[in-house]
Length: 101
Length: 169
Image 1: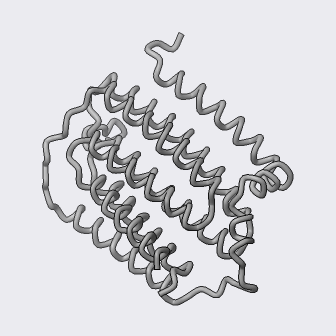
Image 2: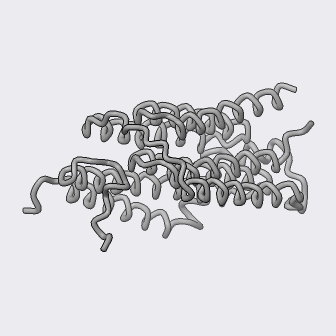
Image 3: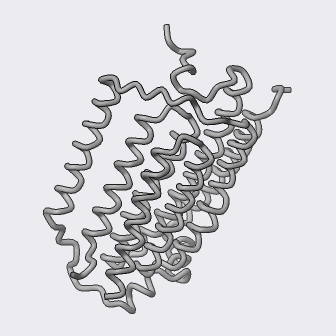
């Protein structure tokens, strides 16, 4: 059984779905941010698999950019979490509902 | 034979680590499960002959981003949230929608994709994944996005420092 492109895409789909479940079902803000990182990693796996199947290096260059953007987004997201924690002393998303009427 | 074994080994551990991150009560345990998952994905990059991206994954993702997450978890001194396992209709609907999305993705993958106009040899694949080819594309074809990403990282650094400061003076 040859490991073709489809195996990598299927694995990436499963990891992406686990990330989506993490964002929807968890109450801890930091675990939600980690699930977003998992989703980005699944997409990176798809990009690298396609890049190696087609022989084009642009997929891996895009992975490079996605990793940089993910690092920037993680830093700013965690800074926001720290700023919110300073006032509300919680990281539970069901308690952070300042925009609710 | 070894290639299939390696892929299945890494894939099973990656999925198990992702589920472990999902299920853990303690946020530190979630972070450690995610680090294991990132290492498995780096191994999968190596099976795909993408050497540069595998090393960058270990350095940047597992080495910098996850360390940042662990710093913040330790800084906020979080304990495990009390497990309020209320299985109301919203969580059930979220699970059903996620399973529907997974079914759609797996269906698309199982239909088969004809992406190979000409077959790619192994030497070509190893060359594609090397740092030389990525640098060639990055500094000629993708030079403008590279500079913009540099500015983006600067903006993110300034923003993170401003947001986490105690006073805005």
